Structures are given as structure tokens and as C-alpha cells.
Image 1 (cartoon, one colour):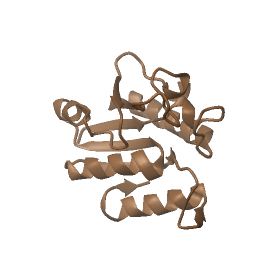
Image 2 (cartoon, helix red, strand yellow):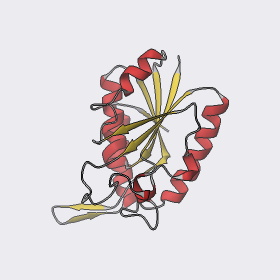
Image 3 (spheres, rainbow, N blue to C red):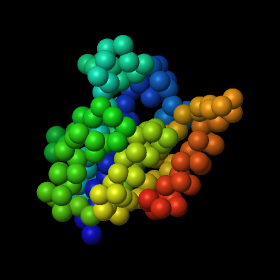
Image 4 (cartoon, helix red, strand yellow):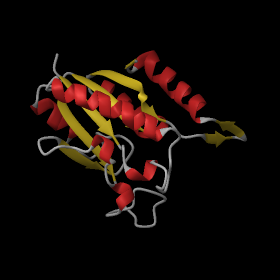
Length: 173
């Protein structure tokens, strides 16, 4: 089984000082950096996903801005591929699936942000494409939100999305 680490959207706008801070993103990034170091040592395939909005007026990840850059804690090294995406699903209109196929990857380990958007969409798509999927929960960041007058804290959002992924799409550790 060949494994790829897919690091999704650990970008400056999700950190304090960015346009869309995610709760405890520094902690998430530090765990992600440890996983990245172990994956490099194991010579796993490593792919960084960078989200960029299609509009300069987007709420975050605006094209060509500091906020849309990958955060230094998980900065890619020259031999690691960076794939640009414009939608939550990292496979949508990108060459991610093709790159994984070319390298014989059958298992993907997914980390990054946000759990309720890009992690969820990418993990589900990966499973639908036939990959064995692992999501490392403490290397994924969630943001508080609300719906129908119900306010959800970031830990509640994280638990809801990780439990959903665990049921049918991924091994969540």
C-alpha cells in the first residue's frame, strides 16, 4: 500500500491576523508539521493543496495575497507538489487524482482545514474514487458556525464532521 499525505489549505488566512481565523489553528499546524516530518522520513508522497478564491473580493484566500500562501509551519520543499484548487473538494477540476494514480497511491492521509468544508469534501471524494482514507483529527481545524439559530462551537463542529467521516468514508484517528 503506497501512501500519500495530502495537506489541505493550511494557509495564512486561517491563522491569527488572517482574514478567516480558525480556532486553535496554531495547534493544528504544529501537529500537521509533525506528521509532515514523519511522512517525509517515510518517503511518502506529499501533496500540498492550496485554495485560492476566484475573486479579489472573496472573504479570504484572495488571489495573490499573503493570506492565500501556505503557512510556514508546513511549507513545501522543492520536490513536493503544490496543487491549486478553487473549490472545497481538492479533486474537483485539479490533477490530484491523476498525480496519485501516476505514483501508485492507494491510501491517502488527509490533514488541514477546515474540517467542515475542504477536509470533509476531499475525504469523501477520495473514498468515492477508491482510495483508503485516513483523516488525522487533531491535524484538522474546524471553525465555529451556526445554522437555524443554533450556534456550534469549533469542537462541536469538529466532532460532528469527524463522526460523519468515520461512519463510512475514512478511518479517523
